[in-house]
Length: 277
Image (cartoon, rainbow, N blue to C red; front, side, top):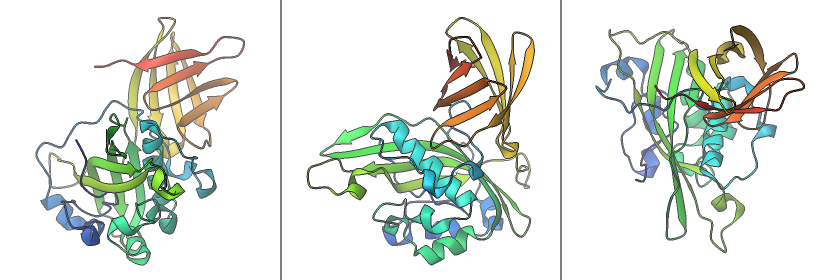
């Protein structure tokens, strides 16, 4: 399935529009967001889903070209990290055709996201690459929590579609994963008031040695709390080019996508996978 809509959906629900209107839908005011809440948004894979503090990635750390589906997800992660850092021009340029696929000028794009006081995104595990006729597409699920400068809270979910053209004669830009469209919509709530801005989430893992652990992620405060064998460890988030890594006192918890590796001093690293509920 090829995704069809816009990933810059900052301030409203996105529906399919011609390219020149693609990102303009994001500039809808938050009051309209609440009124357009869908009844059944698509579920996301379990956390950590590459979730990370938006301030953890800088422009100089944008990952090199990665042809895998995870490489596409890393571009989405970088995109939202740049928005969180208010580096709107760099984020806009991650749209296909050097920003043109967003349907907005760089100035309009910056003005739309500039209405936010806070903007945080959790990026999910990518779907399999959709191939055909020299084209590649990947869909990546996203959850967004934001707070407008007016104080209004925004909560959205959906997916971002990326595209690349790995054929002879294509330039570096065309061969790289770039955002083609996105479908980001408000998430349903039990009341007319959006939920509070909260990125905290918990995931359970089973490691290769049979042991189990719980990881409580707190990207807003740059830490994860690991509970394993009756012991609790608090690890600090580290700056990395892609994926996530937490560490403290020689212990680390790192990975890309859903799989993680737990490492301790003088012991072999333990690959760990999330436990499906």
